[in-house]
Length: 133
Image (cartoon, rainbow, N blue to C red; front, side, top):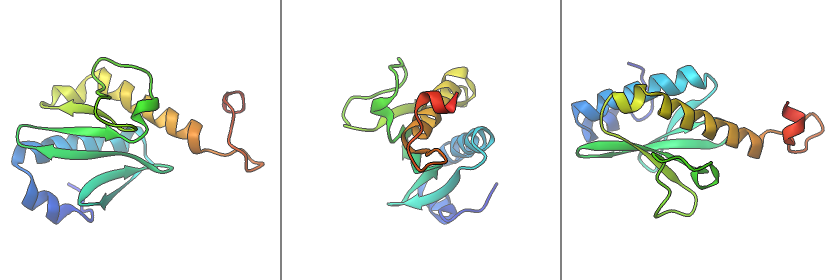
């Protein structure tokens, strides 16, 4: 298990199942996006790539990962967009919710969206899709 600024928060604030699920999410995120970093903002673990990419939120029987530009992502039946202007949520109740291909697809879609919104080309301009091909 890695040490990060919110380690004490994690130890005090979540149950064993939530903690185990969080660290599995962490492994998938850091393996998929090696340049992302983990930070605690507003007492919540955030993953930052070019900007804040996603965060986790904990509830008694589940947790969810919220993608900050999720409303701009393509529709997906397991990506919940109701109730927010920008955030879309993926609910996690079991390890299978992390290990399945759906979670990876949503994560990669969020990464691609963030790159399209924030990466700049060598002239300092936002890249167009044709620049990235």
